[in-house]
Length: 253
Image (spheres, rainbow, N blue to C red):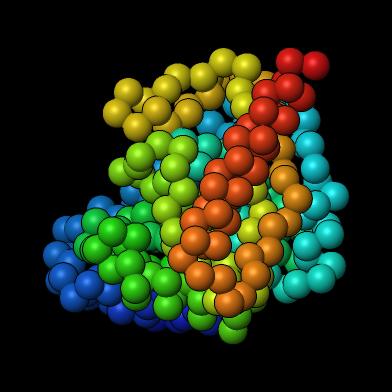
């Protein structure tokens, strides 16, 4: 962790966040909330790590695709469904120890998002402050800056927490087109898991077996019209579904 007041390049505005007095959205943090977050962040981060360690990643399919894209580009666009966030994020963060990879995550710019930002930084992620629903254009700008200037690979969930589930919104494809950086689809399957009722978020049981699948890099051509971009969205959907089928098949084997 950095010293209070320090800022990593591209920290998404954390210099005015938890270590100061206000959140990036301008909402003032009370003294009680600052103390609560300071102590809660390491506890929650520890619980997340404990959950990760309670499961076994037994198979990784397509790891060569990650090596392929990093050999050609300093950053890329990891993309997976919102429901697959828990272990796809864990996999990407773990790869930072062995590969030249900096993984970025979008965290709400609100006062409540300060705790999430602290937790993600403790887990080793690069924090990008923004909301895909309330500050979409600003979030896109921060994504682009992190991707191109700071060589961060920002995670994209093309269906988002509000859905519709397994349907790609245009943001991921547009960012790939603007940046020229490839999309890399990921998915995971668990031998046993709970599905959170309201959004079907996958929570593997402790001691569950996990299979990760990484699809081939997918580059969106520049100069496409709206019809071409819609085709790319459908193509990305199919690649994400194919990655999940590959993870599930690997788990069954």
